[in-house]
Image 1 (cartoon, rainbow, N blue to C red):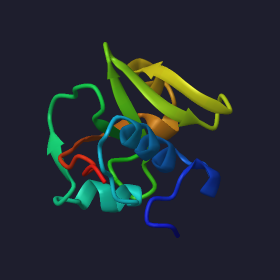
Image 2: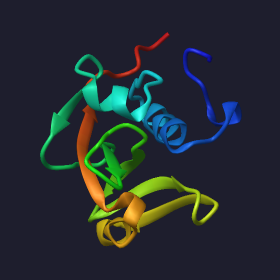
Image 3: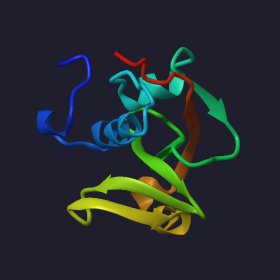
Image 4: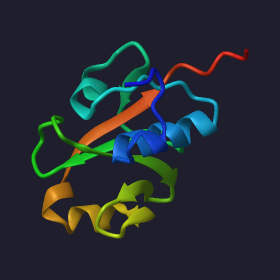
Length: 117
């Protein structure tokens, strides 16, 4: 896998979320959801979301296989939705209404910015 795989490498929720953050100058390693949740080098856990934070959802409280979206504010999360077939913005209650997203694992904030070349 490339150091910074892009959407062309096969779209999934993590790759999509990471590309959105890179667009805004944040550096995110290509971590799977459980690795992202455990990570303490590039991200930190926070209790209240702000724009461009990553939020993880799953059917259970297990981060393995969790769905990853980007908090955009006002109770809204941008994510790559297989249900819709394209990127979508949902409210938190939209996630809670679906069994596979009913559990909010938590929020991660990226702490590294891309270094200019």
